[in-house]
Image (tube, rainbow, N blue to C red; front, side, top):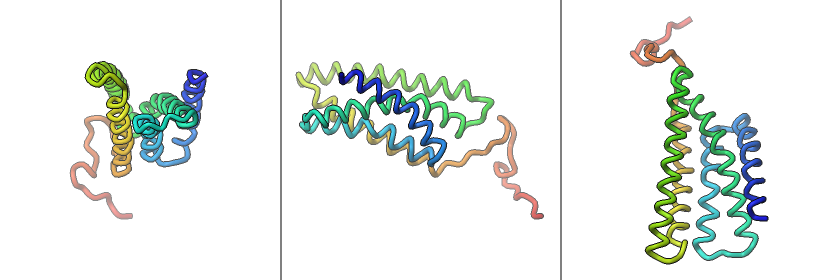
Length: 163
């Protein structure tokens, strides 16, 4: 039934992340949703194996997976010009795929080295929390909504006329 809980977390993550993106700052929503798995992975790595902790870890991972596509699409359109949306979203999806592949390799290597999952859980938890925290830097970003290739007054240092 943990797999069912994971699937439920994916659905909840999709819905509640979208709801949260409409109401709160996207960098905060992103940091929370992408940092969730780190909490669960680190709890397991540090030996907290109670059923409630394991259920929470599985639920957090499901929520994060569900939120991932909402966040990718939302942040791509929010921080990049519409004219390059296809390129940006394809690069984001490519990065997610590469990270998943590298995670699988890292899991195999750490399991072969140690004979258990603890090192992988620790590294995965740290990376997940760090990645989630990096989303907070988006709060400092600003985006010019001008056309691609078109310089705005801000880009070339011309002040807007006073009225």
